[in-house]
Length: 301
Ligand code: CP
Ligand code: NVA
Image 1 (cartoon, protein in one colour):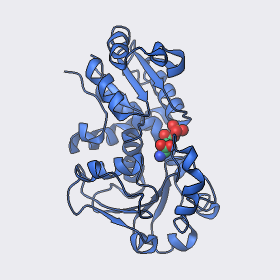
Image 2: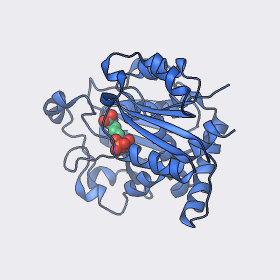
Image 3: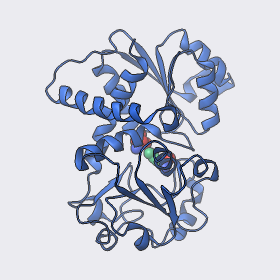
Image 4: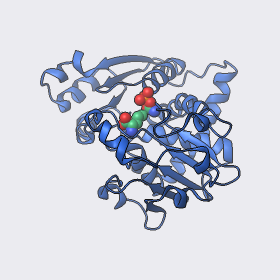
C-alpha cells in the first residue's frame, strides 16, 4: 500500500525519528561524496502552484543525489491550469512516475491528488500545512540540541501553515509548543483539535511566551497568497518582531530558527537572524537531507 506525506499525522513517532536519523546519515554520506543512489531509476514529478526556492532546489538536487530523475512542473504549464481535474492529473502522472511532490494553495486539492494517485504524494506546502519543513527542522534541532523531546519551542508570529505543522508535531513528539500571535491570528481550530491538550499553548504576549524557550521560531507575517493583506498585517503584528531583547528572555542556549524566506525588520531583526544564535542557514540546508530521507522512506522498494 502506498504511503503519502500530507501532514505529520501520516507518520508515527518512530517513523519521524527514523526519518531524522536517516536524514543525518544521508547528510554524512553527501558531505563525504559517498554515492547513495537509493532511488536509482525512479522518476519523481514536482508540481508548483506557488513560488519556491528551498523546496524546489532541495527536492530537485536531492532526487538527483538519490539517483532518481526529477520532473519540475508549474501548474500554469500543465492542463491542470486549464481545467483538468487534480484527480485525473494524479491518475495520469501515476502511470509515468514513482512519486509526486506538490506545492499548492488548497490542502483539499492535495488530498484529492493523493486519493487518486497510485504513487506516494508529498505535500511541499499548502495553505494549511508544511510537513517537510518541520521534519527538516526536527533534524536540525536534533543535531543542535540532541532531540526535541523535553524542549520548549516558542513560535512567534502568524498561526499559519508552518505553525500548524509544528502543532501537529506535538501529536507525535513530547515537547512543549508556545504559539504567540496577535489576537485574530491564532492557529486554525481544526488543527488545534488534532493536537494533544496541554502540549500547545497560545499566547498573545511575546515576552511571556518566549521566557525560557529552547528554540525561538518565526515565519513571515504575510504568507504566499496573502499579499493584499501585507500592509494591514504589518500594523497588526507590531510588537511581534523577534529582537535581541526578546531573544534575551529565552533560555541561555536558545537558538533562533526561521523557515525562510525572511523579512529583516519585520518578523525578525537583522541582529537576530544574522547573529550568533541564528541557525537558519543550517536549517535551510537540512531540507535537502531530511527530504532525501522522506523520499527514501516513502519510495524505496
Ligand atoms: N521554507 C520554504 O519552504 O522555502 P521555499 O518557499 O523557498 O521553498
Ligand atoms: N508561511 C509561509 C511559508 C513559506 C515557506 C508561506 O506559506 O508563504
